[in-house]
Image: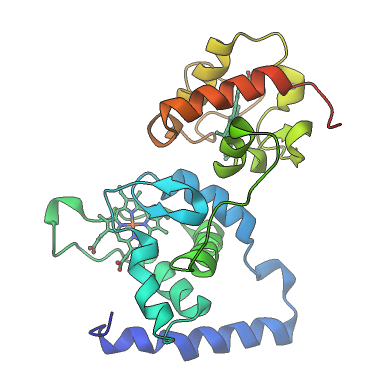
Length: 229
Ligand code: HEC
Ligand code: HEC
């Protein structure tokens, strides 16, 4: 990171200025939502990028912890600097020099989505010890949390209240494990009535390890519909 092109260094003052302006104007609606950024990162970026805090292990693009750890440690990069670089990469993906067949695609995220993702990555990429928040309830509960399922789904036992997708406490009781598994790895196979297609990430079949998937399905099958003790 020592030989970064000069313009990247300019991001720090710029981003700091922007942050100051946001504070002064108290413009709450435009401050990024980091929790939302995490959910979006998991579905739009984690297939290609490893990031410890997101629990993602994609290898098509660079490991984002490695990409920013050294510069953070050297003290040159703060959260806002990383955020600015990530935002810029999403908006204008550079063509890959190392492996031209593996450049980052354009339009992986736009608008508020891109802002929330950049703020999320800025907060955690390369931060020593960053890990998905630990939750109670065992392996399956952890997989549910790591993958941001609760951002879109209500599940009482997991303390989640998402409303983008169906309330899992209502719809899962009575379903077989195989049905639940299909809904997770192939969400388009059967669209829940009254909900849009193409919203639930279609990548969990690749990003969740088979062993973890089994734990997740078992956790849902055993706990959906139960209230938290
Ligand atoms: C289809 C795979 C793919 C997806 C999806 C993808 N990327 Fe990338 N990304 C890449 C590749 C490949 C590179 C390396 C490009 C290069 O070397 O210029 C890259 C580079 C980057 C870099 C620069 C890292 C560095 O070392 O300088 C950042 C930051 C980044 N991506 C963030 C994201 C974010 C955030 C998302 C989601 C909105 C995302 N990427 C989605 C493949 C992907
Ligand atoms: C970005 C939002 C989003 C995320 C994240 C998400 N889902 Fe979904 N999910 C939806 C939507 C929308 C539907 C309804 C449309 C459909 O059936 O694909 C759905 C449907 C489902 C269903 C089928 C429900 C039924 O009616 O039978 C299950 C099960 C499910 N999701 C589980 C999960 C699990 C487990 C995760 C995390 C690994 C997850 N979802 C992550 C949005 C999401």
